Image 1 (cartoon, helix red, strand yellow):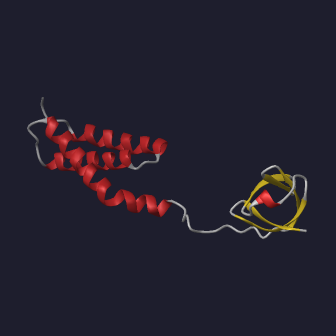
Image 2 (cartoon, helix red, strand yellow):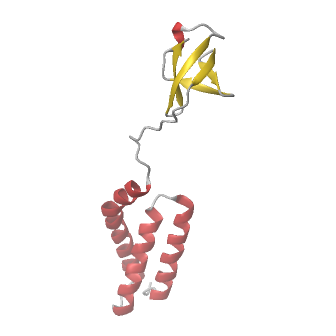
Image 3 (cartoon, helix red, strand yellow):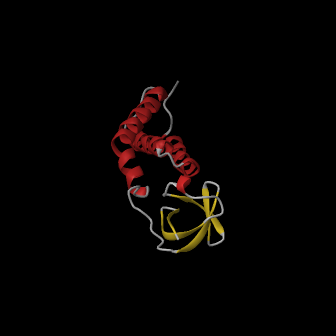
Length: 136
């Protein structure tokens, strides 16, 4: 097998980066970057065999993914410790293991075993899409 032309490696790298838009895992992104780097190297250095070019692209992509993937995922993901408060209050009705409030059914942070079914309760707050209830 002869060497692979730098333009094919570059095109393949760009295609892989484009396909990354469908997966959001950053694995195809780093594989594409590996192929682009090998295409740049192949422009200046002639490889004897195309397998060396492909192997080098895979090795570079594994190294890049190991070093940068966690940092990229951390940058684009939302912080998980942030508590969302809506600060809504009012009255609701216990309906099984849910609370009907403001036209919707909500899960509760409060243990509902001490309440009767269809009992009216006071909604103190809404935190992380769950209501905090008290007896009226």
